[in-house]
Length: 393
Image (cartoon, rainbow, N blue to C red; front, side, top):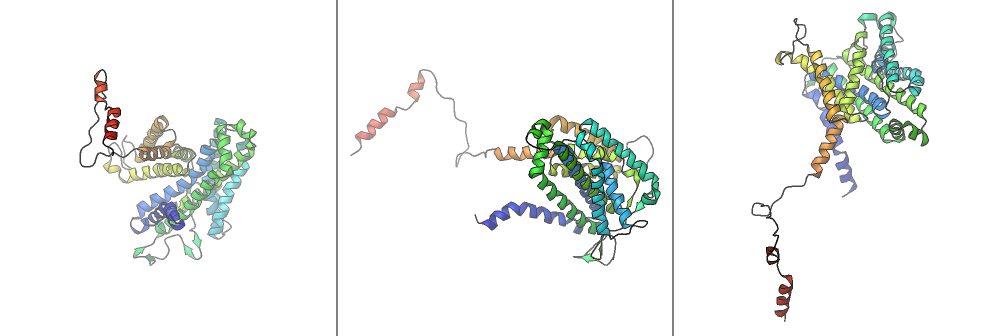
């Protein structure tokens, strides 16, 4: 097979997936595009947490803090009051600011592990929430701040000109942000897979499996733990910026402990240490409450938002459902949805095709003869050979 054909077979599924992901703005309405945007932002943050918890084996409950740093960092750097920087520069600086916040905490992450690190990062969420509520000049306090739209080369990823149409489809804020989210998610996907397949990923995996064995092999334990925490914080900062652009307004109450728990649920359901698994878990946890909110009037035992009574709201019902999903995953598929899909593909590849004799039905062979009749049932190959020689000229 020639090299172009081999390359096409190797890259064909990836190109097909990219084309399919570019199509939704032309066929779906704003509700479904918003679900996709929130899912892509959540996937970026979940990939970062997967690198820290799934690959490096470090428990973190402070992921919401770094999302808040990225979101509010972008809003303050690009808005007024604030430096009023170009939005593209503000986006990069917000991601770096989240990484710097992770770097300030990295000495703790490099020396503490397990539940102790989880409790330490838990303090970041409460500290960050207090700062967001009290620093009114930067964060806007309880009411939050509006998000300046991102602009690249004079093109605004906002509502903009209502006359902008592509192939007959009006392109508003959701349609424009969809492609921005795709670009940021693709950047996250390829950089994270490169890290996992390279030397840093192998070092972090060895560190997760056995700290003693990793140190014997030359892995600097504290340095790699700190680096994993910084990289995870930067991914969370990027996710926070995309969330802010999608919501168009940021408020402190969104970045609470519940958000950190949601991200832990994403990587557990999807599969620890897997980029594809973190993405699948992020889509599941993000889309479920939004879908239940929209179709609450058609679901049993679920009350529509704002209705009174003791019925369960869609948000609470969705948390119950993916809580049950976590329990089922831990009991029956500890490696998550990604591991379950991998095993299913391997089982399908090993399954032999069922074929029968041409022109008739396959019938099972009868039992082999045993006892005294076995000799008479077995053909005498010696006599057959002798008769063949007699007829040979």
